[in-house]
Image (tube, rainbow, N blue to C red):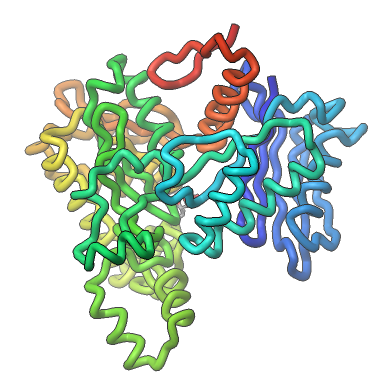
Length: 417
Ligand code: AMP
C-alpha cells in the first residue's frame, strides 16, 4: 500500500510516497518558490536520481499537477498509475481546539479548517490549497489531515491558559496550542519501542531541536506541556525566532524602532534568535564553527540555547514527577554531539548520565546514556512523514474495513491483515 504525504508551505511543497509494507519512501521531492519568479521542482526518481524542472508554478494546484506527472513519468516515475496511491496524508499546521486527532477530510472538516485560518494565517491557507488541489485531481482517493497541534490537545487548562482575562480565551482562542506534535508523537512512540516498555508507563521529555525548536513533556503517551505557545514563536531561542520574552519588550521595541504590527511580527520571527544574538547565521553549524574560532557572540547564542533547553528539562521533570527518557531529535538534536553533551552536563541529579563515547553518533536511533543512567538519553531521528502516513493508513484502512481495526504495537501501526 502506498501513501502520498504532502506538506504544503506558503511557497513550497514537500512530498513523499511511502510504501507502507517497508515504511520507506519510494520517491520524494520538493517544489520551491510557488507563485514567485524562479519556481522549480526537484524530484527524486525511483532510480535515486534527481530531476530538476524549472517552470512557472503559479499556485499549489499547478504544483501538485506537476508532482503527480512526475510520480507516473514513464521514464522514471515510481508509480505506473495514480490509482496505486491508497490515500493522501496532509500536514496541517493548526487544528485549533477542533482537532485532537488526525481526521479523514470531508466537507465539515474543510469548514473547520477554514475557521482555523485566523490562528495560522500564513500556514493553514497553503495547507487548504493543497487539499483542494488533490480533491480536484484525485477525487476518489481518501485524504487525511494530520495536525501539528493535535498531539498537545491533551494538555490541561493549567498548562495552556495564559494569565490574561479569561474572555480572551473564549473570544479569540488565545491559549497555548503547541506545535511539532507529529514529531513529538513519533519519537515518543519510538522511545517506548527502544526502551521496551509500554508508552503508557513512561515519563518522557522530547527535545525537537531544529531550526524551529520545541520541547514536550509526555506522560503516558500524552503531551502534558510544551514550550511553543499560541504560535511557534514561544519557548526556546531558535534559529531566527526570539523564543520567550518579557512581553513588555515587544511594545518597547515597537516604540523605539517605530515598527508596526506586521514589521514587529516579521522581526521576531526572522531577525532574532541565534541569528540575532550571534550576528552570523541562523544555522547552528555555522554558529558552532564560529564559536570554536573564538567568536564570543556565537558562543553566547549556543550558551543561551543550552540554558533554555536545560530549564525546560528541569521544569518538565518537576511537572511530571521524574523522567524516564530524554529524547533528542531534529537537525541539532540528531546531529550535534557537542550540543547534546552541553545540555546533559551536570544533570545527574535528574538521573541523566550521558555516555560521551556512545554520544558520538549522528542521525541514528540509539541510546546514548551510561548503563547506570536512571533516565535513558535517546537520539531518535524524527520522521513526521512516516507518522502522517501511519495515521493516514490507520484512518482510511479502518474506514475501508469498518469492523476490523489495525494491530497497534506501542502506538505504531505494525501490520495490516
Ligand atoms: P531542522 O530544522 O530539523 O532541519 O534542523 C536544522 C538545524 O539543524 C540547522 O540549524 C542546522 O545547522 C542544524 N544541524 C544539522 N546538522 C548539524 C550538525 N551536524 N551539527 C550541528 N547542527 C546541525
